[in-house]
Length: 122
Length: 177
Image 1 (cartoon, rainbow over the protein chains, first blue to last red):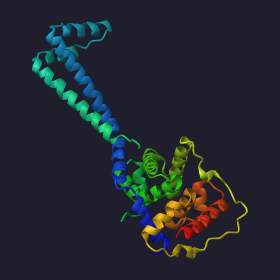
Image 2 (image 1 turned 180 degrees about the vertical axis):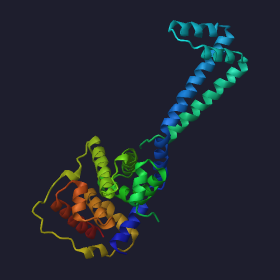
Image 3 (image 1 turned 180 degrees about the horizontal axis):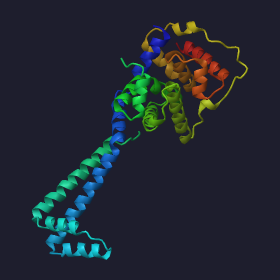
Image 4 (image 1 turned 90 degrees about the vertical axis):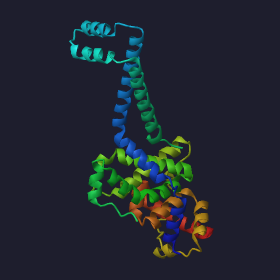
């Protein structure tokens, strides 16, 4: 065997078998990380809104009134937004819980993607 | 068998193309790992530094100039990442030691590339016994087929120091075999 072939065998032998897949996963993550960050932020926001809406519903809070007051205080007309919130408040508590759980699952999924694919070292 | 990335592949890599990255990575991964392992001498660290090197390549892909020597650029990133690791661990990067300046008469016998080796396990055992810097130089010279000037450029060392390292590496390997 010549030295070059010997070195080739040596490198083939010492090269970690999982390294290729590991690096490709990390680079794939880096390429799409903004999308995952966006999904994670949107899920968290949606979960928070669902939880708050559920709380408002359960405690019979004047949720729409509160929102309208806030928007009025900052001198902005968000009638469309408050209408949308009002519509969502027509949901039954079970639907709020379902929304919250769906958002929560999205957060868990996004967190899993981050943990698995984000570059990490030994 | 991975094929050497051409200019078109490097152009695609500049635009964050995953397939182009995989083509480049597949071609260089083992050589870069071997080189880094040669420098740091630890398998787990070499794995981390190899990962970090290719992540850096991905992040700096926009700066790639397909007209310039991509291989040298890649090896420089790998070498710098390994040096940073050695510094962080409080170890003195051996490649900074410039010794034996007088031995500029040394030339390498090209026939050494045909050094007879018993079997693959012999070279593995021998390579693990030689000095890390020598292992790195051997891999660049005999495995990658780089010239002295290219190695000196990659390692940021004077030409004579590179020749000395390669001569010593070859002798050390012969002894161990």
